[in-house]
Length: 142
Image (cartoon, rainbow, N blue to C red):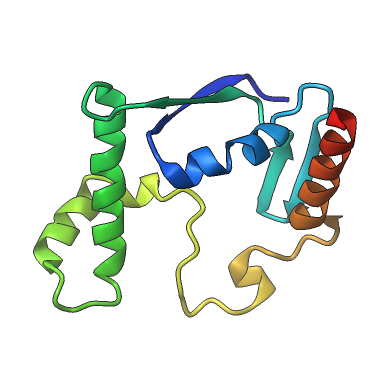
């Protein structure tokens, strides 16, 4: 369904610690399955070729990702903390920072399935499927 992609991640103990688990979610011998519900769906296994770790001091793309992540976090905090520089956050908004928070979940006044765009019936539970996929892959490696 999708194209393969490379993951280059800033050197990080938490991600390195979960690298094996994450690599099981990239199993090439699993069929592609759409999991999730309504507008909250994804395709598994992940089409990544693997995870490579890099130094953000050397890799420009990681530096940019760090700036965007920090800006997104700051912008998000502005909704809950009046002490945050609201003018700067308006400028981030004008630059399109909201578009980079893909599929984010944020409190709103929307409460009905129609307002939340969650009216579709059916789907596969993501957590259940991930557990099954990981279990199958671990049995293969035993």
